[in-house]
Length: 232
Ligand code: 13P
Image (cartoon, rainbow, N blue to C red; front, side, top):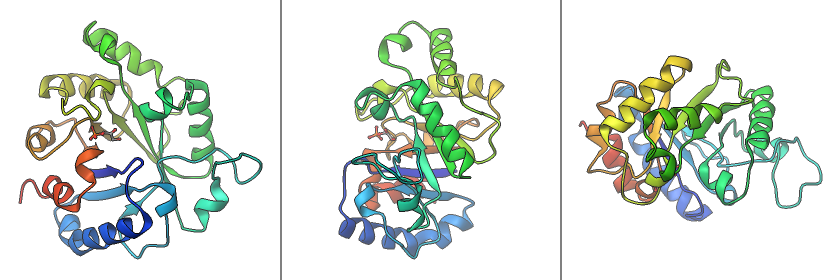
C-alpha cells in the first residue's frame, strides 16, 4: 500500500522537519511491510531532507523557470531533488480555477521531465447523486489530454464531497469506482477523502485500492502512523 500525506496549507518548515524525521524512524518497518510513504508538505517547507521515502510537491508551474510571479518551476524543485508532484487536485481545480486543459498541460510537462505524477480526479456531490454511471463518465472526462500509459503515474480518486468532510465514500462506492477505472487505466489507484483510523481497515481491504491519499489525518504523525500500521 502507498500511504500519501497531503499537508495542503499546513505545517511550517520546522514542524515538517520534525514530522519527517519521526516518519523516518519507522520507515524501515514500513518498507518491511511492503508499504511506501509519500509526503507532500507546503512549498516553503521543501528542503534536502535525509529521508528514504518520497517527499513531493503539491503543485508547481509547468516551466523550468521564467516570469510566472508566485510560482515555482523545475529549477527550484531540482535544488531539493524533488521528482514527485500532485496534479489535478480538486482544490486546485475548484478554488484556483485550473481547467482540464491546463491540468493536462501540466501533466504533459512534468511527464516530459520524468516526474512521478499523482494525478487526482474526483466528482462533486451532485454527480455522485446521479449514480455510478454518471460518476464514471465524469471521472473519465478528467483524463482528457492525459497520457494514461505514462509509466510513472499513480491515480488518486478523491470524491470532492468526501474531502475534509469526515464523510468518506462507502466501501461499495470506492470498490465500484476503482474497479471501473481499472478497466480503462492500468495504474495504481489511491483513494482519498476523509481517510482516518476508523475507516482505514475497511478501505485498505478493497483489492482495487492500492493506497490512500490523506489530508487531515496526515497532519499529525500519530494519526498518520495509525493508518500506516493499521494491520500491525
Ligand atoms: P482529507 O483526508 O482531509 O479528507 O483530504 C483528502 C485530500 O484532499 C488529500 O489530498
